[in-house]
Length: 605
Image (tube, rainbow, N blue to C red; front, side, top):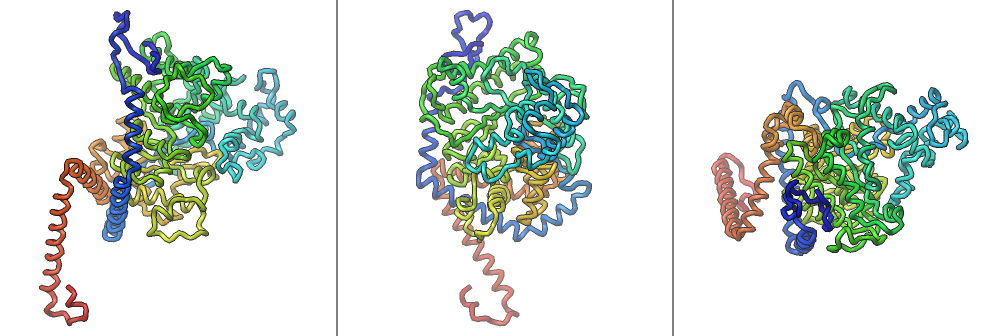
């Protein structure tokens, strides 16, 4: 393999010394930029926005009619699904960052235990013990409270990603974060491993309900040996703590998040490095471990347990305009455009996936953060490149993209509690604008308003939406953050059990758990569509699944017919059919009116 000047890895046969026949190709940056700009143009056009808005409104109306007519039938059907309920139905937390996976209470209790029982453990490179670190900071056991730790999010993090990131550090001390929430420290990440095992154990033991998780590990691309360090941490047989063993779990699948930290890397390299160097640090070890696993056994083994990649950071930060600049040329301090960075991550993941598929190895999904804040058209790029995303709340600002996400069922893993603290307050919330049929009082909490996204997208319009927790350490009060999300949603909006079961089913669909597990949780024929899921496993009655499938199929049919120029003909025929149905219904009424006393409005029929 070789990284070409285009920034995308190329694969050659060993006998191809002159490198003339690249075995795996992907669309070029120029093609991506051209298609992206065309999508932006189309989705911004008045005709497209009007059409999409009308179709989404019709989906809203169709669902309201369905629940009005069939709501009792759904409840009755669900009551008949004996042997299962929401708590025994599998649900996956598709979006959770490992450094904040523990609740604040779990974290405080863990630190207190270590200070009391391992105070003499050397935890820093300069030889300080844990007790000495706390003493030097003027802290003792009396400071080990949730409030003193200062990790729960508050008003100070709103629109402030810097303050948000500092919440990861207990007592606002970076040293504490390194000791307890990092893998590369003097104790080789032992405390972080023990805390992670506590979180994993809750999923494995099924406390409260049946759930799984997809936690994020970080790879920064700053050094080439990051993958080896991470592999050693994940695969190590830890013999300390309450739950010894490695970091692999039957109820968790790992994703790797790549923070968009070009400016940090540029500063570290003192202006001599290029974005290509960062890409090679990120992907070089992966291609080596795939092509030569015997030479890189640790990384090769780690990759078997990774299901996808995420791209994270503040979407609202300043970035350069989108261009066709090559990464080998990008040496300036400015952040490259979000869409540009996503293309290079996607392109190399795509090449890696095709290579791994030829060798019978697992492949990786690309599921980045998108539409949380910043430019709405970030969502156009992720529509082109990704099967699902995290957040996506900016879709309410762009109905054309919202309709496209519906048609292709691009997954949205939404985190309302997280967004409440970070990016959306009630004075600027989008829901009254989107859902005019709802009367929204200004006295509603933002969280209440935010959940309209779940109701509208999943329960009304039928987008592929799941609930996730993002950062339980910062945003949740209980030890079971995912159940907290579901229970608050149901209590706040009187969601039916069918609604929340449907959201849970979507989370399994979006997840990277293996096919045999999805068959166990959804039904053996789940790949054929939601109507083929086993309602005794998903707890979603067939009547709801049929409604979703039929309306999605009808929308696709409508779009295809319009694209082929048959729209007017079909609409005319449908109007004729509706008229015939109306006349038939009127005839039935007249036939049964003989024994009914006349009334003033009768002559209007």
